[in-house]
Length: 293
Ligand SMILES: [Zn+2]
Ligand SMILES: [Zn+2]
Image (spheres, rainbow, N blue to C red):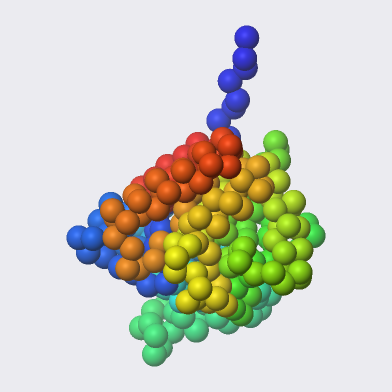
């Protein structure tokens, strides 16, 4: 008799939009908040992937939790859409909250200075005690950052202007979640270095259960955006198949992409899977989406 796999982690989306917030009637189903994902580990730690405007609502939930679960924020990079919610994240304002934070391309001292800059005039009113509980940490390339008893968070370099990280969450069973919000896969490029980088990346992520990947563009839009640091939904699908991922979550939706267009994008990506003879599940991230990993 098959043995049910244990419930391990919960992944929840608080913001799936890339580039800038885009509220309105055309984006109401997938949402207009910028990137933020929450991972709850089985031992109660809260891993936060990016601090776009979606992090504000997560902060309200955490603020109401008297248990004060340990919070670990991992920033893929410091572009505005990935950090603009930080000043409105309640645990950073509370003296009794400890917030650990790491960023792929900023060591701890640089990261602390950056957060203090975001939370001070002229960007933010001077409030006593803000970010007192912040603990900026270095993100060691080889070891990653341990979270609780059985989870480790590592990173892999993405292809993105100024640098960005793909955040990888490992649990006791192996590769659980890879979060690649801003990453240019460049399948149209015949540059040998680019192809070698992408193949090596697919090897690093081989067998990942859930791949959350940049799907800013459609294939037809790519030619006008070479070097902008993003991928098409069709490329994300091809890459997820290359990795042997179980599930692909299309992410970082273009601010102009209406809900119906995201639906069409998902349909096309599912066709790509069938054409390739794959078994990959494809969805598009929406605010409130919850997965058990
Ligand atoms: Zn972005
Ligand atoms: Zn970016």
